[in-house]
Length: 195
Length: 362
Image 1 (cartoon, each protein chain N blue to C red):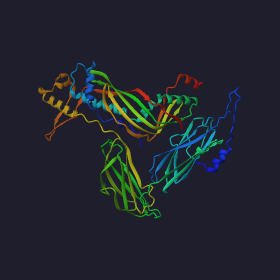
Image 2 (image 1 turned 90 degrees about the horizontal axis):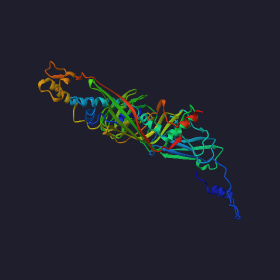
Image 3 (image 1 turned 120 degrees about the vertical axis):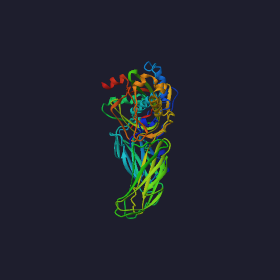
Image 4 (image 1 turned 60 degrees about the vertical axis):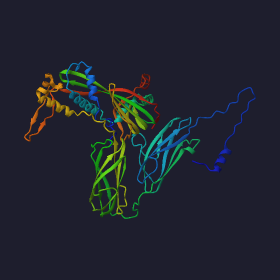
């Protein structure tokens, strides 16, 4: 059974997104002076929602992995993995909290009116009881066997569109990253590991 | 894990006692102790009790070195009572996948985790003794062994000793694409098959639901639990079950079919389970098609067009084709704006935060 997708943490539609897009668009040169029928904003809102959902239809743990890649403790372990090239370094992570931000930007071209960008802010929060990850060559290559509570919130500029409650989930199948996710290690550690 | 009083007494009498004194000119120094390894085993069991026959439980074995010298080698073994190992460390290709498991050097203050999934057998309790034996032996061996015991919940009679005359199995078919939101209704098909060699009689069918409520049962039963009088050899009985999903999170529907004719009930239970996602936000009170119809009517009415579409620019850009069909009803073809709308989404990374993360080598 596949893992929970990020899309599943979000509702099908967002109240007042059309109004927020209209308000934002009125401030932009592209439609500032145009007389646009009201239904267009609703239509645009639906289309933008569908497009954003389509890029979020991936494993939620895949999105959360970006948070691990920047955590200090994981960076230290990544440094260790550089010292033994090509050797997987399996780790068990204990209880911790993680928050990963994702910024979907909908680039909208509306005929001769031109192009604009609609910036969204998505935050995924997770409280892990335990999870196993594997590093290799300073990269995160897989994660598996974890239990956590996860929630998502979505904003369009200053408008909070959705702030979901936490739901319990578990990693039903391991997530692999090929190529691995690069973990930022100190440059001095990189050069030391390379010599 | 415990010592007898005699052993304790002997241990005390063997303990060397060192006396130091000082003449006041130089501080007395305690003798220096050589670094020593100290292996310690701890085990976490999931899920907690109560346990059932056939249930898979996971042992998280942590072999740690609490000493100040490395442990060069350790062998981890499990004595199993009414347990069968399903797998060992299934997600780590380089870890050991069977027991006993030989561990290489464990540095001071480090530990190694081993995950063992075991299935509970038919007896009413289980027991496992997990031992890690270091080489060379460490000074304190009392913490090298952990015993885990559990009672197994009594279940309805499983007809032990009755010769098999039928072999029932349960399968569930569900639409993987059906919505799984809180409050949604889900429908799935339960198929009970009898592989023979004889007919199965008086089949008791039961359902246990977690975070879902049963709404309707059709087919071989009209409610659950129920008794299906007979399933012929190589025959099937099917039930269609409708249920309402509960709150966001995990849900499960476990269906069991047993008969006195089928003492081997390992394949008589199956589950339909998954994740429930939160309910969609309340839908907007504005219905887009209403606006679209309003716009169309505005165009049809020509002189009474709405403000939004009155402008010639938009009239030119929007193509609507109302059509009167032979039935006398007006049907509208889908409205596609002539003005092309292109949307693509790029994803940029946002801010990430993490609390302190306890990290152990697996």
